[in-house]
Image: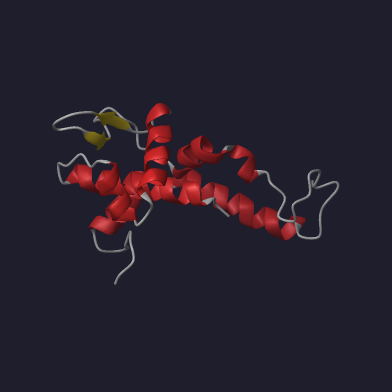
Length: 145
């Protein structure tokens, strides 16, 4: 349902949170390695997240990516909204432009339930709650080799 950009953006934000909890400010290569993503693609995503003020960065010694103490907890919805827009939560599962309750595609009613449920999940899930699951051993961020 999500683009590769959104998937990497969410994973990158979780990675930064985990490393910030360890009093580290990771650089692009650190994040890319941690989320198993191409460095150039990760750099572009981190730049987008920083420009949107969902994430902060500093250059030079002691620099890297970080969340400030004053930041509110970022939801996955905020990340997806920045990376690919809210259209994903209105899109037709069959690819039609004018699909609606009044003019439904063959998948409309079933897909709408899934799509709306997914929107509710990403509005309630936060970077910190996902990072906490990883920190507490309830989930993983990257492949187990």
